Length: 256
Image (tube, rainbow, N blue to C red; front, side, top):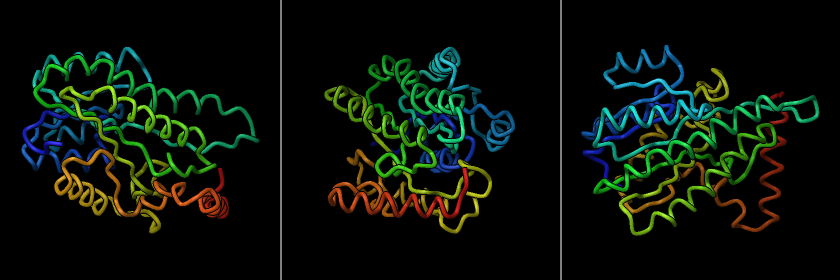
């Protein structure tokens, strides 16, 4: 992946991992465009000097409109980081969680796929382009407390593999960033100060180091996510033990 002189759209880019990446790519002489659905976060990003657009990733028309507006305003657009997502706990025994499921699938899975549909024809015309999906270590070793979130991230991992294969021989690189548990507000404000989560600054620094030192990498994996990413590769017994340990720990420390 080329790290300079790109024009990059980052969804969910006004906070957390998205904003951290936006700031780092801006430092490297990239034009960075932030899309988000939170008006107050967009206002803060705009005050920080970013070009911003509002988008509802759960709404197909909003997603297509975003692509059309950004391409019209920035014809040099050649990269997207599909970072927007939500993560909500579900109790599958307690009652109907269809609302959470519908919203999570729409934002986390259909949103990136729809945005890619709208951007790929434009990216194919560029000399070099990239699509980076943001999945999760939980795509590989899921948390039972967040079943739909984990399912969407596993689906995006699979989708990215298909995308990468189909983009062979074109100008488009398909990358996947799979974070561990990071100090962001994804599951609530408590996560931002949870000592069990990886500090955001450390995560962003390691990601940029990987991209700098391994420009041909396709999966961007910080050291802390390796245990999740490779759990199954060590055999089903190891996987089952890690799955139980992770979910027993979460069950003991959190309630849905």
